[in-house]
Image 1 (cartoon, rainbow, N blue to C red):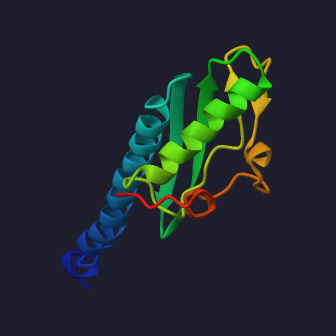
Image 2 (cartoon, rainbow, N blue to C red):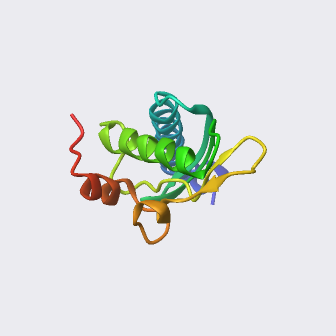
Amino acid sequence: MPRSKRLWWLPALLVGFLLPVSGCSTGAVRCEKAFAAAAMSVDGVTSAVWDCSEQFGGGWQRGDVVLEAADKAEATTVMEAVMRAFAASPDIEDRWSTPQEYRTHDRSIVVGAGALGFNGPPRVGEVREHFGITPE
């Protein structure tokens, strides 16, 4: 069999593989930017960095939110404001997960969503339901 007949499928394979992967990376960038923008819009947040993966219909989200707070009560108040900002953002999808913890720069204060009545880090849809927020 001639070589040209054996390799007819190679371009189709490359297109079939590259298109979904490039679409996934766009979703991950959108996720990272949306979460960071929402978190940084809250007074008391000094930095917010995300790492998102959107692959093959699923994915994960990891966030690092650093707060400026004098005590645990203040950190919890800032964390609640961040969660509300996530819920209000129309750019953040219901299925995406919120961070496991929110901390001060020196890690002397660490708070989590359990302080707000959640059983572990909630998905954004759960946060919206909890606070009764519908994004505009």
